[in-house]
Length: 330
Image 1 (tube, helix red, strand yellow):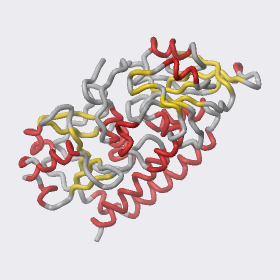
Image 2 (cartoon, one colour; image 1 turned 60 degrees about the vertical axis):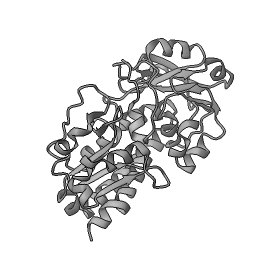
Image 3 (cartoon, rainbow, N blue to C red; image 1 turned 180 degrees about the vertical axis):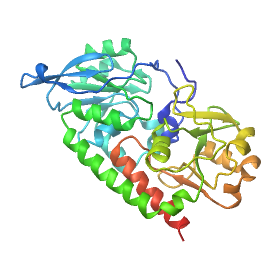
Image 4 (cartoon, rainbow, N blue to C red; image 1 turned 180 degrees about the horizontal axis):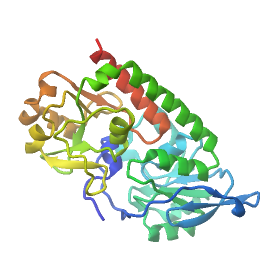
């Protein structure tokens, strides 16, 4: 299936990207090492398109899906190749920009340059099943062992990062990050329980087209963190069914009063410098949005952290605490 202006990463990073790769419904199972396949130098793992024999702790990693480099980064592993992030580079942190600074660009989003990828001589190629179909996987496998991961839902960064960690032999790094995140999550939920339970929340952004807005659903990366992990209760007017499986839903701006009715705190996405993406600012500035309680009470907060893994999820919680929960608790 194709999406003209969006994919899940777009609304998580507030960037507009055309979806050019076929999105498959296939999601990988648990990416666990097959003990019978290990011979000291290689190991057999399960991925979205079947078993793959890969090097143990590969060193030259090519990360060719939109979120994959940052998920590899969370495991303290460098990448030798990634897609070109130039069109959206301002939406990334200085650390992220430095991380991909020396990686070879191997095409733009949805348009891989296979020759450039092969020239990087990767030990392993990593990608996401929501962006890489089986035909593309087959072609990538001709270059190097290719592991395509996929969680149970589009925003299931917990499972996706565990699969990547297993493929890279970095499960200990993943577990350490998970433990740190869970401790911080539980600490903040306990400390700000009254603020969390005493408000009704929404995470909104730009829509698929002009004159629309969107809601991050619990199946999306940030929506999962907000609703399922932090326990921030969405407004009763927000439809939670992810009928199309995109992790978000887009609505006509005329519906904003109904969908965000009763919401007392609105969260959205901002750039790292604190500015709003113009398309999001247009939603906020619209006369219909300005009639909302959150607009009248100045309770709209932009958060810059993009959630793709446990360290970024912990950073998002820290930002939520500083920018939202602490001010609201006074």
